[in-house]
Structure formats: structure tokens, C-alpha cells
Length: 491
Length: 128
Image (cartoon, rainbow over all chains, first blue to last red; front, side, top):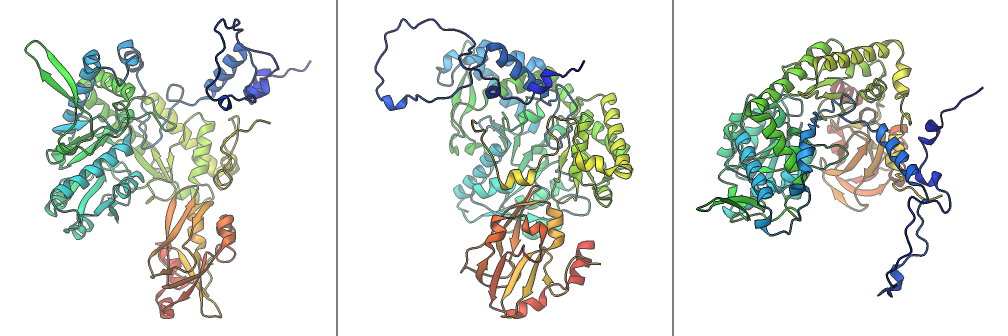
């Protein structure tokens, strides 16, 4: 007797493959509403093709797809720079409350006071975390926050009669979004080198400090996961030349409750709430990228901000537009669902919990660094912060690329790290374990990485052909980019 | 054993230049560059007829890993761009110093070539 797994066979089928003429999920009764003429009959399509499937077909199809999903709820996800920490379910429970999920951005303010109070409190908490006196929740994601930041810097210089301050300094280790945002804001990007410690070169900042300087965009800790011990001095130099300092808060998970960007000298910082405060992200969203600013940029904050007005009886909340606001960043009031989850996270952990989160994130990254440094070379051999960047250069000399190592990790049930970034590290493997992983998980990951390093020596073909256990094996990324086939087409 | 032929001159930004018999310069990116970039998927080159100063940004090259700027090693007027490499960026990986060439330039100052790196100088620069 032979058997074959019909679910495996169906795993590759689309709803079109399952379609059978006349099949449907539910049967609707004949409409008892008289037919009306269409204002424009050409809007009606006769040839709209949809798959004809039963409800059960649809449920099984999507459940199967969901089971193939790789997520932080199923597996370890050390994707560097993305802070794939666990997203506590209480965040979703709170965001699902009808008072939050069932409201509309155009409702009168007096009917959504609870939602406004939450936004006000979140704004205030983020100001406490960054040390900044003002903030706005309007930007929808990290790079959107960057854009808000550079537009505020531009508005500031223009208001001060210095529109010729056009140069934005950006370290060579920066996220690619930094130069992109500066460029969108109309600035000229000047790339500054890193020193041998992997930090922005102090002398290069001094050399670039002149009356054309608009500002500096810097990530702290940087994309190598390293804290810049000169950061306060760097901010002084930029300020001395009349520039402002933009802090990319993408790596704020390393600083929560430990250091405040305002105290370091930053004028503006964005926060990636989806990362630092644990809201589901991946595949591009959804995000929230609030900006917090010092006194000089407060008048330029994007609209809206939420204000509290104290009545005789109780506090009321309302949307407001700062005096010289750069304007609105989007329709509505930001990604509200993300804001609710973020506030829930902050309140669930409290100040002590946040401080422990950043401490554990740094501890976990350094644990991996010390356990793996004899196998994979550490890019810059220093105590790291929340993430550690290895270089697969020794493995590359044996013909195995960082890409091969990453693909092989999938076979072991681990999400690959961020590869080939930062650009200043050859064969970069950027690992961010986050604070929510147990020692047992970290130890299992260490075993996987050591096993893969052994395979590099003994059976490199296993890596060249990986992954082996996924429904689809090694993809031809080059062909996908050269001849993109972006849309499924009906047979 | 170098992958970088001695008849070409090089820049630290990984472009090469070949001076042709007619005195014009052919420009591309090096074997080392394409090896570091990985599979090249997209190339942007300057318009034919444009005039570029040595060291200026002349275009960009995108691989499965990253996007990088291209810099023109010598000053002059762009006579021709390689349509084949624009249509088939994989030529850069297959034959970086041959079929993967990018543009031909009428040099305004041929002495600039003498200031570029020899293959030995380039090899020692990328080894460090």
C-alpha cells in the first residue's frame, strides 16, 4: 500500500487551483430590493473572475498559509536592527477594546477623550524616556520620523535667516534611510567615516563644522551595536558650528531608562515604537515613529499634538498645531492602534521594567558575542550594546558567504540575521537577540551557529544549497530583481 | 595571481579605465567590486553627450546586497554607454573587464590616467 500526504500536495495550491464551477461558501437569498439603474453602466464588469470555492476550502487554505508563517510567536528571530522582541498579548487585548478600535478620526474630540488622553500620556512618557520637553506622535514609521526631523531642522534654519545651511553630516555606518530622508528634505549629504573603534570619527566632525552645516544625523548606539563615547563632544561641536543633532532612535532598546538623548545633546530623536515598545511588525509595518524634540524645535513639531486643558472639574484633551508646525504627516492621527499597544507596553513594564529590558537586551547580545567570537569574527571587538555584528570573512575565505550561512539557519528553525549591513563590515551578520529570549533559547542558537561553522569546514555544499526544509528552496534573488514578476496572473 | 589586468588603470573606488587605440577611455568596475557586490541587478549610467569631471558621480550600481555610487575616473565627454550591460547587468559579474564595460569617454585631459592606480597598487589597496 502506498500513501501520500494530500495536505502536502495542497500546500502549493492557490485558491484558483481549488476552484470548481458553481461552488460557493454561502448561498444568498434572492434580493428583495428592486434593481436600480447604474449611473454609469460601464463601471460594471461582466468578466470579473473569482475563484469558486467552499468556505472550508478557504479556511484550510489560509490556515495552511498561516502555519507556514515565520514569526516571533513561533521561532527565534534575531534580525539585527529590527528588534524582534516578543509582543505581549495584552497589547492586542487593550487595542481591541471597542473604545479604541471602533472610533473614527473625524469624530468630535469630546466623544474620544479616552483615546486623546492615551495619546497625551504616551507623548508624555516618550518625552520622559528621551528627556525631551516636547513631542508629536504624528509620524507613521521610523523613516517618516526622520523626514519630520529633517524638515523641522530645515524650518529652524530658515526661520533664523540661515537657509544656506544645507549640509547634513551622516556617518558611513548609518541606516540608508538617513541619507534618503536628508535628501528628501533638500539637504546635501556628506558621509563621515568611522574610526578604528567603529564610532564616528571625531576629527571628521570637527573638519566638517562650518557655517554651511545644517546638522548631523546619528544613530546611538550605532548600527554596529556600539555606543559612541564621544557623543556629547560631537553634539557640542555641531552646536558650536550652529548645526542641530538628529538622533535616529532605532536602537533605543539599548538605552531605555539608562541614557536620555536630550542629556547627550540631541535636538530631535525619533522612536520606532513598533520595535522598542513591542508592537507586531515585519514585512514593512505597521509602525509608529514619534519625534521628541528640544526647546529649539518644539514650535516646528508636526501636527497634531495632543494638549491637556485643565477645567475646574476635570482634565480635557484636544488636538493642537504647534506655532510654526511643519504640517501634518498623514491623514488621521498617526497609527493609532500601534500607539495603544505601545502605551500598554510602557505601562505594563513601568520605569523599572524598561530599565531591565534594556539591560537584558545588552546582556543577551554580549552573551552571544562572547560565546561565538571564537567561531565568527566580531566586526569590532568591543563590548556591544543591544546587538552584535559578526563578519563571515573567515568563512568567506572557505567559499561560504554570509548569505549561505543565513540560509542554512532557516533549516535549523532560526530566522536569519540582518546580512551585509552595516555596509562598512564585509560579510556582515548582524544579530539582535532582544531581551525577551531565555538563556535556553540563546544557548540553542549558539549550538546552531557552531554546528553551521562546522558544516562550513566539512560539508560546505549543504550551505550553498540551503535552505532544504522550506516549501521553496534557494531563491534566485538576482533574477527576481532583474526580471521582476510582481503579479500572479490567471492561467 | 591578480584578477586585475596590468593594461588597465584603477581607482580606489573600484572603477577601471582602459585607454583605447583611438585615445578614448573605456570605463567599468573591477573584478573585486563585482565580487564584493554580488549579483548585479541594475545599473544607471550618465547620458551620452554629458560632460563629467574626474571624481564626479556618474551613476549607480545595484546588487542583491546594496546600491553604490559609480564615480568617473577621468574627465571628458560621454561618447557611448553599453546598452548590453544596461539590459543585462549580469555582464558585470560574468566579464567585468570585458563585456561588462559601462561607458566610453573622450578624455579632456589624458594625463589624468597616469595618476590612477596600477593593478599592483590597486591589489595592495584592496588587500589592506
